[in-house]
Length: 350
Ligand code: FPP
Ligand code: MG
Ligand code: MG
View (cartoon, rainbow, N blue to C red):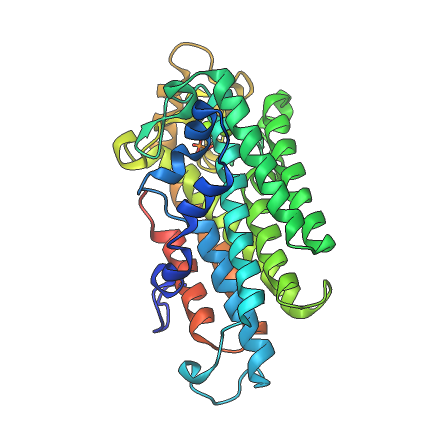
């Protein structure tokens, strides 16, 4: 992860395939209710979205296709540039749809999340419930999810439907875990990691697994397993870095509220690591930083601790694991772009 190999930029390599994603979403959320249509397509009309999830889906689709196309074995001395990583046109079309569906599910979950978290900003602007109302935000999220489900069924692959339905289950379970957490849960690292998987990594892992399934790989094939594991570890790395940035970056840079986790009563990796050095943090974690002065005191202890450093190392470890799973697939431009993405997740600042 420290020095990624030469290869194409991950976002550029599949950028053209995702150019029309926003337009396609606006098309599928067409309805004669103007407010609902505007609310559901709100984030897709902004230029600021990174399209991180669709990009991973396209890159995994291509890295897996390299395995199917080349017949070359892992470790063969072919130049990666000569490896054909393009799936057949009809398969790639479905994988592009899958990327779109994944982004729609993700966006629906953010619209709802901002209601639950009372967050007034998202992606550098107002959140949907702030712009419209809670009622519209709930309906807009449901509507996006409904239309995404129709598209998912249209892919005509029952295993993919089941995989993505499991991702939805995890998203909701993660939110419920958070809402119903007991004091003992809040201080437990395993509980934090499980919640992190549920709320973030599951959707990414299920979508990379689905990309391989659409590519014609069997559910137990090593290519499908590698695709899922890449998504799993990259998703964990991504969220752990998100939890780090919540402490270190400004709201301006993040485009959403900063220091929101402590203010929302959530102890994430930095604080949990810091609590190993400063056990007095445990009482604050258990009472969700509700006593006056808790948030400031927790931040001060964190600064003195190795919490931020250890969090970064944990994220780096997961990114490294993600990259190692790629060794199951032959070297190809897409695989190199995925390695770079592993690095990008760690060094990102917003
Ligand atoms: C962001 O976490 C929240 C999520 C990634 C998942 C939210 C899931 C739901 C609200 C369940 C409903 C699901 C669907 C599909 C409608 P965060 O609040 O820690 O991050 P943030 O800083 O980006 O707000
Ligand atoms: Mg939130
Ligand atoms: Mg939340």
